Image: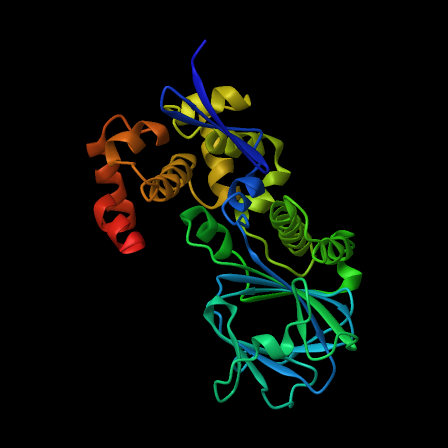
Length: 337
């Protein structure tokens, strides 16, 4: 029996067995959603009376806005304004700036800067003036408009694989999905108890996962190929095997044997449904994991290589440079400075 270092997180269990990275019970979507996990995420209940208009310049990588009462308009660049009604949710990819207002033509009154600093348009600080208590902010504690906002500042490579599949603005109307998470999250945000930050982080994660899954399942959406490939049981199993155990010395023949398919049939169907051959998928997944592991404290190319299926640091470095265009050292310097 191997000695194992077990690390548990929502949706997956990470096990290092003799420096081999293994994921347990992880499906395709979970594999990518495990990147954008809230860790002390910014969460705020906003309560406002019109007229109001907020210019969001916080440059967060991903923002979730859930409207529970009233009406709001989302405005971004030259795109047509999007109306949000009670029960609607918007997921916004950053770091571009945008505006949320009671009406599209309401002049901007408040600017939200990085680190969630809020000011007037001319720079006067508004924190004390608009602070309404526990995780609550606005211009009237009994305001007509109520919404929840959560932001993720993501820099992991796993996160980017998911983010790049999402539209710049993802709007789900209340009649397109049904979830108890928004009222539950709103209720929990008013509490100040031990462990509350962890509870809020996990509820925000669940809200994000539910919304993305609901969006992908809409008839009018265009989900990524790896998501639609989940409808084929054999290819779904192949993807899970590659994602769950990236350090294993996979070949198309071994993967075909595990899925009960012929080598040629697996290669053809995998490429057709996923959009790339199985070994290309595996290489990209390994290097994505390596890119994140290389930025963890105390790691080296030598320690990371066996965790993601490379026999030597030289093999990992060569693959990293070939696929990503930079060396592992250059990547780490760019990420960490």
